[in-house]
Length: 50
Image (cartoon, rainbow, N blue to C red; front, side, top):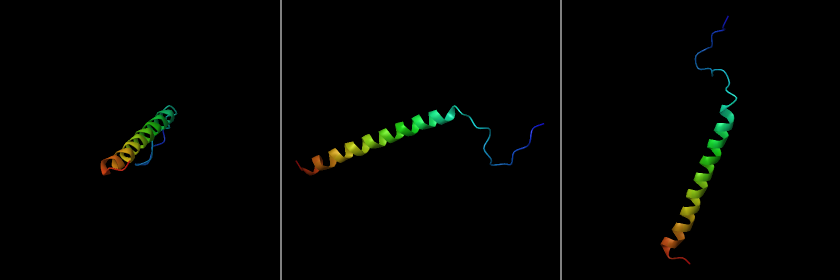
């Protein structure tokens, strides 16, 4: 017999989802780092600083 879940509670845990979430988080972090680095190089160049 299945026990009914309350609304708003998460379903059964998917152990395969954690590595995927970790990989996506690292990809998002690397992309954000690349964007910040490009802006950090571009702003002084646009202002004429050496």
